[in-house]
Length: 234
Image 1 (cartoon, rainbow, N blue to C red):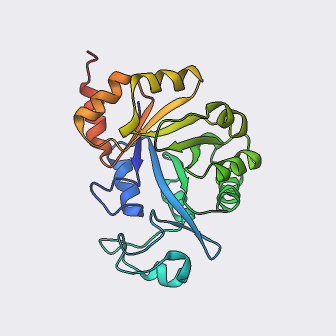
Image 2 (cartoon, rainbow, N blue to C red):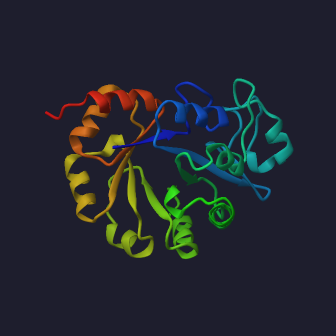
Image 3 (cartoon, rainbow, N blue to C red):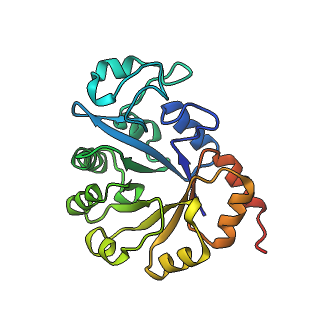
């Protein structure tokens, strides 16, 4: 079962920061998951469209300058990173799952990925793009047929045929609140992987292992790694 460090390892370091991603690598994540907004032409790694929750700043990110956003404390004295800074930190040690948060972000993200594939020896298999905005995912598929796509869903998916035709995903990334054996089996019959978010408790990890899901997003990669190591299927 693949372990995705959800926004890095926010159980131990400020979410979506270089410190959090390094911590996730140190604590055994297989992949790193992060969130990207496009602000004034720059790709910034932050979850919310507002600055208030995760920084000492305030306001809507699209109404602020990049210089202002980058001047803020995102926790423990670290900054909101550019997406390129995360790529440079990771340096091909782990795969990166990029969640597109804002509209019209896909072309810029794909351009950066192409740059790192051609100039820095990354491979397409080391990237996955996900979003709740399926229009963005369609753009990703049009720009690069080789890139892995994870369709984010909060709820029970009903339109698999359309998704398969238009997006050709690699996985369905679904909330733990809606996961059932039938959902897992159905997604697997479509030859797709099932990745579940956000899985932080040990008994939830065991439950996901019992269901044979393919991966989990977690704030505590080491906790999930320990459960997997000690797991014995019932």
